[in-house]
Length: 239
Image (cartoon, rainbow, N blue to C red; front, top):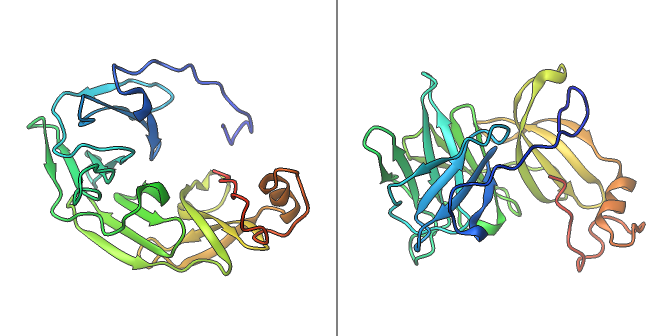
């Protein structure tokens, strides 16, 4: 989606290198896939518009499924590829690995990610940091640079928050850029908020989806029930 022209652009799909087909995914603006009998080889396209796939022949130390993948860039604009979570063996579910471009090998991080639950995590690489949040609680951790050390924070969320996704806020529309979140709130709808990157407290509420529109998207019948009153129904992820 191009916010300047306010239109959708069809992107030709470039077939990735040989991989395990069920492993194709996206994370932090990247496309990636896993290969090898142990799902320990990574291929990725850092820019989805170009889809210049790169294959890393060196196997990771941890076999993974649905990991978080990102590139953390330092002050000198040097990027480090990092893979987080998705470990399939007991005790390795939250292991972190960094790719050494010079040595052409993977190295484990000094600390495992302090949040578990791969299917409920939201991640974002922004400002030289990697943020990982549990969608259903206020727990969020961040890694400053590629040093591998994590800081765990109990984040502030709007009242009635049921789950959230971390997003980067683009200031091209006249506002300020920064870290943000899309939050689904009971009986309110969807809110977009900006967050303080250090304390993870809400800085500002930027907007709210009209409740009627959220109810229409959230209900299989396009109904008029209040958000959160039907616990049996599954929420629609607006992202």
